Amino acid sequence: MTATTTICLDPKVKDKLTSLKYHSRESYSSVIERLTNLAIDEEPLSDEAIKGIEEALEDIKHGRLHSEEEIMKEFDLK
Image 1 (cartoon, rainbow, N blue to C red):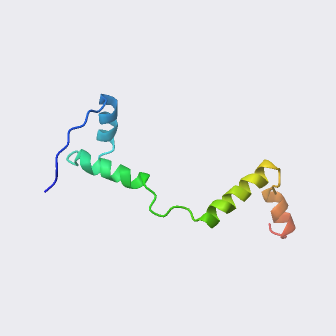
Image 2: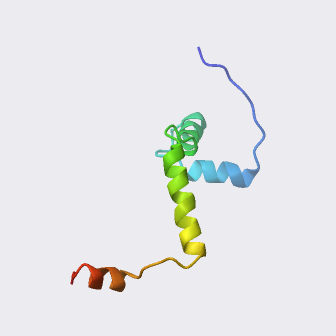
Image 3: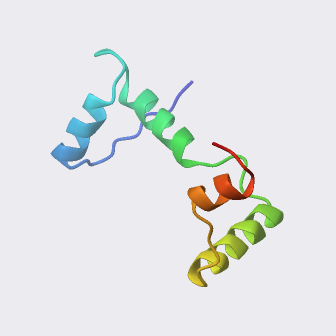
């Protein structure tokens, strides 16, 4: 058995939820469930991936970049 809860929504938010329905009879609960599933990352980044991103950001900050042209030329690609 599902519980029923009443929430207050700004009319603009309700309009947005309505526009996100797959069909007119879809419940707001289904729409909200779909949105929350999109918002929650069930596979967060690993420490290794985060470290790689941080290193890449440091490279960008210090100008250690190569253009696509440079890479194509270096590897003799057309």
